[in-house]
Image (tube, rainbow, N blue to C red):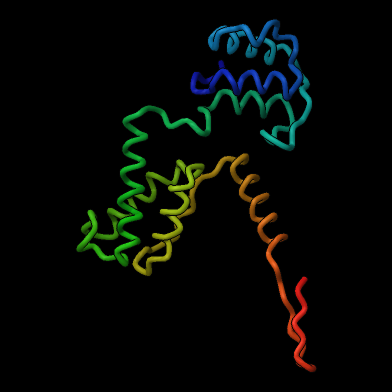
Amino acid sequence: MIHPSHPRKELIEIVELFQIFQVKDYKELKKGELSKELWYVLTKNEYIRPDSEHYFIENIHELRDYLIKPHHKQIPNDIVREDVISRVKHLLFYAKTGYDFVGSNYDNIEQVMADMLFVKNYGDLPAVRRAIRLVNEDLKVPHRVEPVLTRRCEKKLQREQKIKSDTTLRFRLSYEPVTVIFD
């Protein structure tokens, strides 16, 4: 069964992207009906067109696994969302105050690590990645914490990094008569 956190727009996008047109009138169906119909078709089919641009799914088993799990951009509920945002704000404040416990909401490094380990699961949020990056620079942190990213977010960040590195001007120095060459 498709996890209810997947929005209707995404289900429509999946039908169109993977060309699962056995789902009739998919644009007019309500989310629950579309979800049931799409899952029925996916259980009957054995092949889908691979996608290496948006979802990075190669076969129907990966698509089923993706749809069974909660949507990667959805935080379960508003209470958890507020908790994540609050913890991120505390971590950012801790980093901005020079990693000092006196001005922050933390009494020791274990509390900082507990918050980092909690928010790392929401690594698709830019604020979470930033907070973890800044707090990892603290010398008191016993081990680095890496945010958990979805494949989609990882690929997006890699593309952005590649574009940034390709467009950055570089120069070379030769120790002959002073020459600066911009690539």
